[in-house]
Picture 1 (cartoon, rainbow, N blue to C red):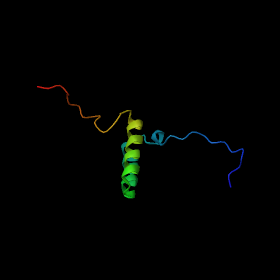
Picture 2 (cartoon, helix red, strand yellow; picture 1 turned 90 degrees about the vertical axis):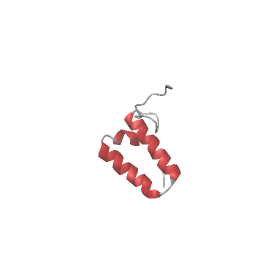
Picture 3 (cartoon, rainbow, N blue to C red; picture 1 turned 180 degrees about the vertical axis):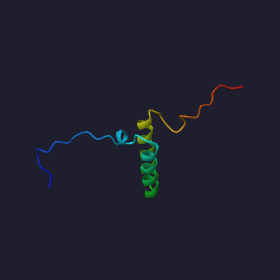
Picture 4 (cartoon, rainbow, N blue to C red; picture 1 turned 120 degrees about the vertical axis):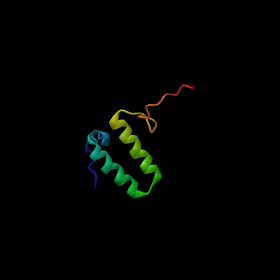
Length: 66
């Protein structure tokens, strides 16, 4: 039973992903579900924890044509 006057506090899972090991464990758990939408959501959380904006980040290549 939830109390009517219960107060919720903000929680951001990205704040807990402070090492490569934490990220690896987090993603391993996500992949273990086999749920593609859950995995995509987990990738978004990892991206926000590392300050990147998506899967293409870290590519390091150029988008200019030769």
